[in-house]
Length: 115
Image (tube, rainbow, N blue to C red; front, side, top):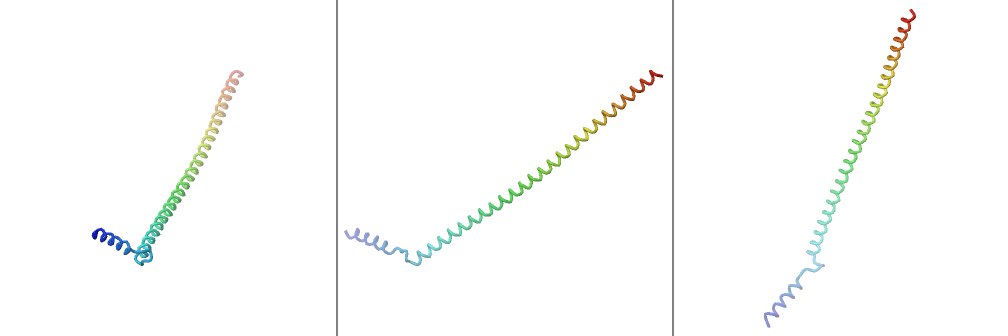
């Protein structure tokens, strides 16, 4: 029985000798763990803020590019409208020239018959 009781006494001594919450070493380890956790949280928040800033900058660049593309499309549409108007004016001029030539031929034919 002596060895079993000695083992119990050793376990009880070990349990009683463990550090309590009032122990400065325990408080120091807890403070270190808390500081590490706070630093980790701060780093994560900083990374998230950096990512958010990068996303905002990327979105701003994309919006600027989209606005520039829309402006260029507007310019191209205006140029296409101008080309269409020019083609219509050219067609009208061609028709007027053709009518004038036809009228001149008709007048020449009439003049030949009269005279």
